[in-house]
Amino acid sequence: MRENSGEAKSSAIAAFRRVVGDRWVIDEPAALAPYECDALFHLSELPMAVVLPADEEEACQVLRYCAQHHIAVTPRGAGTSLSGGATPVTGSVVLGLNRLRSISVLQDAGQAVVGPGVRNVVVSEQAQAHGLFFAPDPSSQSACTIGGNVAENAGGVHCVKYGLTVNNVLGVRMVNGSGQVLELGGASLDSPGFDFLSLITGSEGLLGLITEARLRLLPLPSKVRVLLAFFSTPRDTCDAVTSIIAAGIVPAGLEVMDNASLIAADSYSPALRLRTDAGGALLCELDGQPAEIESWTVQIQEIFKRHSLLELRQADDQHERLELWSARKNILPALLRTARDVYVADCVVPRRLLGEVLDRINEMANDASIEVVQSFHAGDGNLHSVLRYDSRNEGEEERAMELADRIMALALEAGGSISGEHGIGTEKLHGMCWQFGVDELDVFAKIRELFDPHSILNPGKAIPTLHRCAELGGMHIHEGQMPHPDLPRF
Image (cartoon, rainbow, N blue to C red; front, side, top):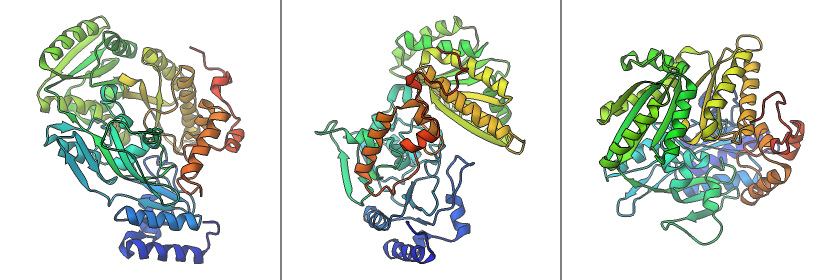
């Protein structure tokens, strides 16, 4: 809204109420509070209003009004984003799509057609009744919605074998920044023209709002086995991951937990009897035919023995498998219960360098006097370094954010990326200036303008302006200028 006057605000809210009804427009400050941020809690801003359309046509009408009156729009699903992607900007309208919850499982086609407000876990539950499953399963699976999964290109523990959301979406319907409906992809495996479907997946709400998604469903595997292995050191744990992949085995999941993670999970669920004396642990899930799982298990046991294995546990029964997985799932709740503040630094590094990168992060954490807990998707090198700090202590939050920047720079120096699955949002805008050059950022901006000519969709997120990069020093790491020159090179 060019002039955020009381009159213009009143006119906008009245227009939204005519479209969606009084009940589905929120503008009272107290009622707006739950929408002031996503799961990146230390960045927040109250929106002008929250609008909750019932269907695609209502979403189109709201977007057209916002485009005509230059009102910024913040798309929102369940608000589980960890990068500030769903955090409003001043004077913006939060457009929530939680009411679009239609779902249809097409068993013969191995597909599901769902609304953006359908929770990820609901897709899995309904698909299972047909002998199928939806592979992407982020940690927030019970709360996060499919629209947000597509917007953020969500991953999860099974992405090492089955890919991210982009590998499991066949088509979408979406509304662009002008209020036009576009249909990309479809029921077939390929379609003519440019692959705009992949472009939309992971676009963080900058190019449009997903109003329907066609998902790929896979047959449930004949057998599933989970191995939980404890090792002497974090390096041994990470090297075991590299050796499994090098042996030609592709597990459904490979998750690493360091000693601090094991201690946190054990305090949360002591009945699991985790080895808190171990330097690290590896959860390895295998799925497929029984014979191949038996063969892989023998090979993996030998690999583990070569990497200072302390103990190995095995679970074939579903209840026992879920018990072992709860060791990994309980870590963040345990940390949130005991820490004043947490920040998750989501980066990607090549698998072969996992052990070395972890050692360097621990050295940097010691220098900064910030505790770092490591539990992450090792199969695709996706680190989730959890920084624990207390913002009430003078300078501690600044040291934590500086450490997060150093971890980003280290990931780039190792040949990785500043984000694996959490997205850029507002959190990593400066990191984009490190990872990409001027020409690349210019192309990103032009693509964004094509879909959103009025620049109303999620402004200030994901793609920094060249002016913003200049303010940050324009440090493009691929041109040899390290954001932190004291970091050793790989």
